[in-house]
Image (cartoon, rainbow, N blue to C red; front, side, top):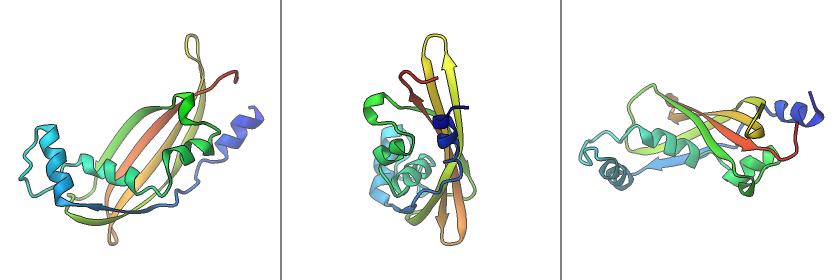
Length: 145
């Protein structure tokens, strides 16, 4: 394992600063309308759990990329996503917590070297965990092995 790979692997477990996100009725209405859902449904669309989690992570995408010595110019890509709803969403303020959950270096014949970074956010309403959103980023690497 290279020093670089060891350094990135050591980031697993690092917590995001976290923060808050407010699910407002107007945002839920616009999102439901754009998705072809019922904008008058009193329960906000579940995709708002993901939007709230990334919106309240407490740092910018560029700051997250920098944890792994990457930038937006490197062409990072959204990998996988999974949302688990523990309770229905409602309007109001949520607290966001999360951390880096995994790091994997891969080498593809055609793509070259790339890193896959897993991260997870929990969305809280008071003491109740409402949703868990797991995601991955694909970070292309130049001249790495």
